[in-house]
Image (cartoon, rainbow, N blue to C red; front, side, top):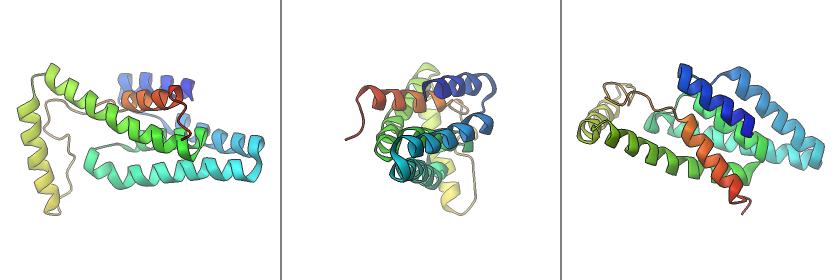
Length: 162
């Protein structure tokens, strides 16, 4: 998981993308490893971790502006570590994502402009007009792999199996 997260952060920072050739094999390896170490229950736990996180992220992606690569990276974390870990990693990722967004807004002196832009885009979206929430933002897109890595690492350090 640590190697996958490191590669994802580097590629996201360099290219703005998290590649399927990284996340999909890692997710498959996680499910296979769960099956090898804990049988059917282990594989099911890893698949549930991947499915629940992916489902939640896909439902929320329109609201928080996550891309497909971000969703698949979190899915791979769920597949590698299982259901309970994935839930904590996802929640902690949200916290770090919020902090990252605020830090970027403050550093670029764009708090007011970004807030107004978000409100305008959300109102447009509420009227049934699909829009990219980051469109027109002085921040552009945030490399969310950083938040995913920090959330996952924090869950790992805290022993997130509660």
